[in-house]
Length: 160
Length: 405
Image (cartoon, each protein chain N blue to C red):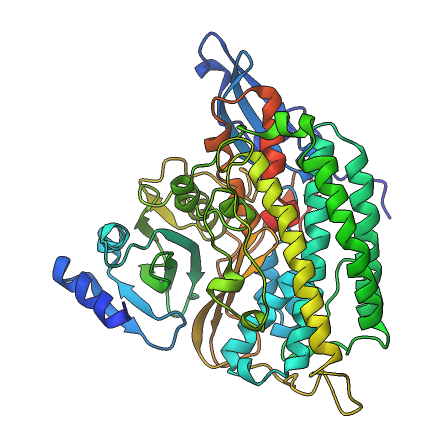
């Protein structure tokens, strides 16, 4: 199945979900309306023509203060059909919120926690959204482009 | 230097920075929380496991990570593409060549020079990556045997790994963190005489694998200890994104070297070992270890074929320059790219976002196979005995450098 067929398939089931396509990215990407992401994922996971059974990677991206958006990229892979797909959602930078896909792929659990930890993206419906790599009492989310680290952590100077 | 004490010690600092998930007040009458690590020899680094038990039975395991977090992704946002390679080495420090190979491949794909890389360079890349894969599996099996009580295999494995490390040191000057595979080429050609010595090494290693099999894999104590323990069903493995020997141990013939057929792997002849449940159920700890050992044999096969090519059709010549295609300035066009490759421990992926204006990646995320594989531990150790936890944990084969990045 190629990307236009996948797009058609989604359009038929959830008409407003796909808002764009990124030809340049590899694998080719569909840009999804954030509110429909979970439904789209459910469809792609369970439809027997696509069957995206593997969620390889969740990447959170901060586009910076000027563009004022954040993005989450989902890299899906279908083992039986050997098809790659990237899904991208764009979120407002002040309050980045997106539905969690943990119910569909359990691997999303830790990967979403990582995106929350490093970028502060809130995954709604995640069963256990805690920091994973940084200490629980760390301040701020380091991969934000305007991140400024705290001066001291337990009396240790953070700047080296 | 001032004499001021920097760290302000308070008795509950540890628990404040990494609080337990299970609070004492919420436990039921028979339940008990046991803390394992962060400094525990069988966690292979610094990892804390919070284990909820009821008697001898495990009810839940909560890993606490991040003790070795070195901000790879943050560093990568301020370094040019070629200068990130040393940082990539330090993620999975037991298989640095493989990580470099995946990284270089990704950047080359973004630049569009992936098909132009000379064949000799590709064969050398595969050769060193497979050598490193064997070294990594040696550590995996050796330490795993030590975790569950056998001490000899560890020494034997480290002895044989030492030969590989010496070879790789000869190639690039470093034992573990190589910075050898560059974007567009290699740091240097193989040293003169390497191919012949490598042939001797392959001849030396082959009987050692037989020894390893009879010493560990078919050892009755080892089988009793690992068969039917920590069974990971295939559907659960895929749902958790588990890859590498763990997924193959669960019975799926899935190896990215074949599936994606990147680099020169399609020209090489090798098999993909999968778990068959010979000693117990498919996907138990024994299957995973057996897959690793059989993979070492396949890697030896690949190495001999690479050596044939490197001494035959793609012989060293005076004119050959492995740095000929190394770009002076790496500035990919604006794009997002996800690249993946088969590391000894699973699928290592990199997500790049290039903005087209600078030679520094806008975002570079590493999809770590150890991180994802480790997330399945709570699922497969539920209901197991406390004494089996180390057996299950060791069979996942993680490197904390890559879990925490």
